[in-house]
Image 1 (cartoon, rainbow, N blue to C red):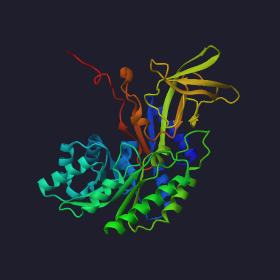
Image 2: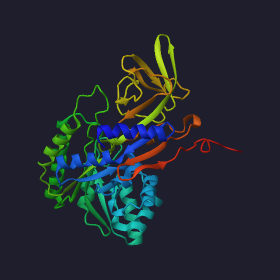
Image 3: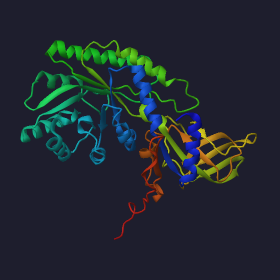
Image 4: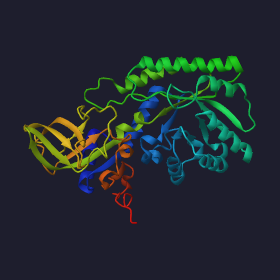
Length: 394
């Protein structure tokens, strides 16, 4: 939606729903993906890391090629949502053996499996032999942390190729999020391209698929000076220099969906303590998280619909949790802020809905609402009590 429609839709949602709540604008999400594809061109495939926001997978089903699934719960969500299992990349540093066996026996080689360790490879090998089922895998190359495998182990697995029931399709690599350097993207792709070329030269192995997580930067704060599309253009240029000959799949989460989210909360109290203006909202840090925020000092984009021009004060916005750490933003300038007003935190489409300490103090989970011009408002999750989860009756 355009800015005018954006304002009217947000105002309508405030009239309709009890705060706090999330609103995810799937039209804006679709537009974001169109922009990404227009810059990257038709060649790279897109894999959505659904941990960024699982509520959006049906909205993305026709726009992305794959979904990165990193837990049994995410896998169950895909099943319940009717996601085509040909779109699933079953990833994650630990996969329970019984979950692997279920996936293999139920979906066979429709799923692409990632391999994080020798033990993980051995489990996959054992179950495929036991059930005589063929599968496809990506070998995850470590970036120097607990994820993936050293180059030496990957080389060993490829040297012993082919296998009876496992087809190695290629390599997966991810080194982190919120990258600010185009040079870093270029260097990683040069390294990966050379590794793929070496595998072909040394073992006659052709990497059919390179899944790469670029970790593109999302401009969350007013202090940020990096343009998101500039990083996207740099990635596009670096991809054009790849020579290994296989397909490239770009794994994205935050960069895809951050833009489409709004978190709406109501000011329930205002006060001045020690010459500092405080306002209390009915939400809090259990609902809201911006990657890179430091002591609530950085300023994310916030809309104050009821602002009154000319009455400007700086406010520290605190949530409703009984902890001094529940501070959303410090010394933010608002005009005419008062109890009953609403604050709309933008760019909350990624992670906030799942990363907060949502069970702390047994407060309710906020409603989650999706919006599109075609379908209007859809409640994806109603307000949900958490006290039954935190309750024990001996």
